[in-house]
Image (cartoon, rainbow, N blue to C red; front, side, top):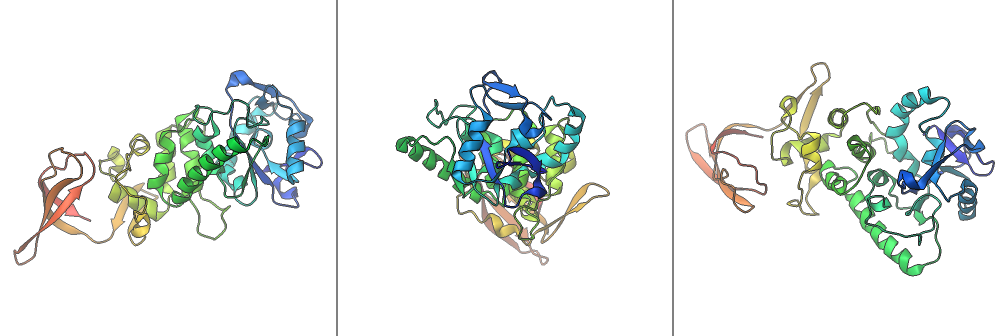
Length: 356
């Protein structure tokens, strides 16, 4: 991110000014009827800052200072919001800033306001509402090992409930950090104002460059005008090879016409992955190579292949897993039959196929 909140001087400054790594601030976004837009000298009156109606940023700052923070990243203050005097700059800034938001929650402590920015935790906490921190898509990238409760009122029973829920989410996010298949189910029960907003948090979890620096990622630029399908296609282009291989080998239906080898966004976000156990070896696809030709926009597979095999017994839709046979003929005419199964409900007609 390009800006941070200097809590000592109480103003927004460029990221590079910070003498220490900023803390992340994560919060549930309240419904617009419970928010107000305030013009504040903290960000130089650059844009209206949307915060809960009964919240004062001065009190939020005092709490952060008391917790030990010197610098912090708060989206409503540090990411240019709609309606400012330089609204024309926002679109250009968001192209770069939105895909890199996840970096603000990687290196330092993250203070989580589960009810809304500045609200105490006991203020009508409902972890299952559509506006809950635990139901919002964006908070997936804000989930951190090094977290603490914002608005802590000392209610030990409530704190325990939140901690248990948070640790469960943390475990799920850890499992999905480098693999697209475990990550997709986490999006299915989450809410977002735009469908494509479910894709952006996926980018920060699925695209490490491999330099050992967790703040370096490859991600497509953000565009508010882009459709969810186009944003998904752009994300696929920069995915790790493991994730591409998982989609090729594990998704059971043909995808969109130009890319039948992988699911469309609608197929991906509705993919039922319950047939994969928690210990499924998603990282077993490391030696499979899928190559993207940037000039033609096509993908190719570079790996083992048997040109002609017969598949039988998977055309009828019965309770999964369906049982069938794979028949392979050797060059001298000998046939070898193998038992196979399908854990999905997409019909595979009897016939001749290539086996990858």
